[in-house]
Length: 435
Image (tube, rainbow, N blue to C red):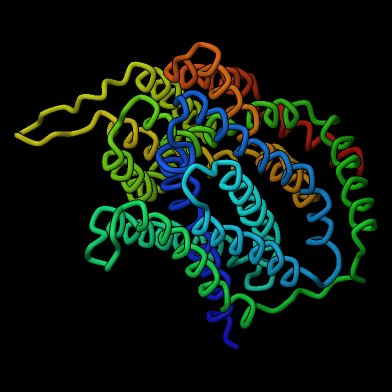
């Protein structure tokens, strides 16, 4: 097997699973949940149901993250474990195809299970990066997976949108049937394009395989040790608090934006086009703002991105459903929100990771990034409940989207107080003490 073949096979898993993130998580599930599975329910009630589903899945994965992380770090069982979680997600996604109208409880169950499979598989997918790269190629290899994920997820989503808008082209009776078949298409896409990884990517050698109880003890012991280490670095701790707050807001917008649009009456076609805009516009902006972050400082660009997100919540809360009329075309105001989100979504995630690398001790990078990634899995727990809960209590979904601004403002305030120079001095002092 050539090195290039291994890299491509590894990156194709991003192409495979990103179909779930675009078509299911961000796209059709929120729309279908309101129109089909929660048909007849109040909009604030269906939003609460979806918010609880998203938060539940995120919380479960966050709680088991130390255990599955221990499997990833120890023992030669990464591919086997990835297969388990991927299969779990694929089967549950296919199960959505079978859920009849009005059975929102069953739809939530399959969604939670599929989300656990999706998020859990990523732990082992990330850990296999070392099998197909070295220090000189790891950034390029990781970037290739990211790029293929955008492209693959976007292409299948585009096909699924065509199925829903022109069902007769595909021999389907109506749009609802087309959406059901889209869930099945995601499961097939995810399964088929996962095969090259299992065939061509080598399993890293490791220690003895761990039982569930051994992995649980090892994982939580490692978590406790990392917490003790992080407490020694106040700058790192401050950044992690900031990151947890604002990335929760980012993930909430990703998972709940379509549901919000439905709640205030935005047309389904406009919601879908907006999602496609985010998918295909976001990629070049991630590169552009990443370049500006390198020149002007990652912290400044992250703060800029968070300011854009605060603007998004304000504009979203005051969004008018009636479209603009420009040169004879009707342009949904929701497209403006999509464009603003596409500008900053990718760069906030990328620059947060690079900023973090500058304030942590390099000899403990794996340990500290393990904690960082676990916090990322805890994201989208507070936000969906906050958004759906406020909307339910006030009877106004616009108040729910406005509440998410609190996460961005609090996160930006904490990030503004993070002193990168102080973090570097703390690392230098530690190195001098240990030498």
